[in-house]
Length: 249
Image (cartoon, rainbow, N blue to C red; front, side, top):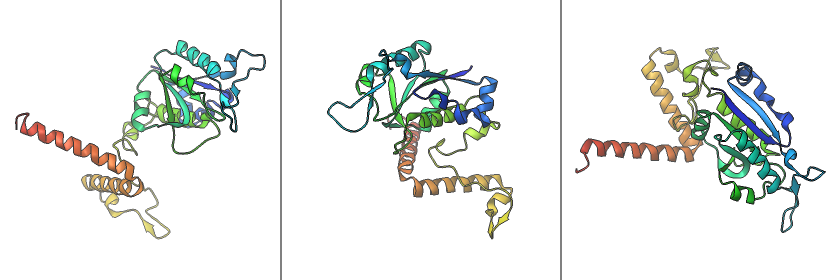
């Protein structure tokens, strides 16, 4: 099955961009995924093809118009009625690896790239199927960069894109933790050596060391992830205990 990506943007020339290179580029050539752009201005009805207007109530910048984008979104839905629609906006919910995995398992995705001061809110009220998502607590010049990042995250999970089957599972966020530190040759560099356990040949010890490093790094660097990880682990443990005792015990 080919994963079909379509992007509503004011700058279609930005795609596939970096996604035309490396693993994603090779996958595009093989037909693992397709990339189609939709120019937002095509849905403006005035002779100047205006897509934005000053914010109501005053303020700096311009706002993308709901009537223009509404027609563009409807066109995208007609082309791919079953694809999720993601709007790139710093006001959105941070995208997660779990959501990326869900999207990659489907037939494709539609990405709506914000610009200027953002979208007229009525677009989301009238089209509630649109998910508002962001990459992080940062503001970009436009949603195209975020769209490329999200597409990259999806494409690498498509069947046949990555070489090793385990490449997509032993990584940060896949099990709720940051990935363990990685090392490779040379064995010694500037007085620093590869941890001895990684040279021991004992796979059980290596796995235990990697799990400990993942937990330690997550606890120190991402306390939010660590809290969530412990919460899920506690819930799983409680469920297992209830199952062992039975419903009436």
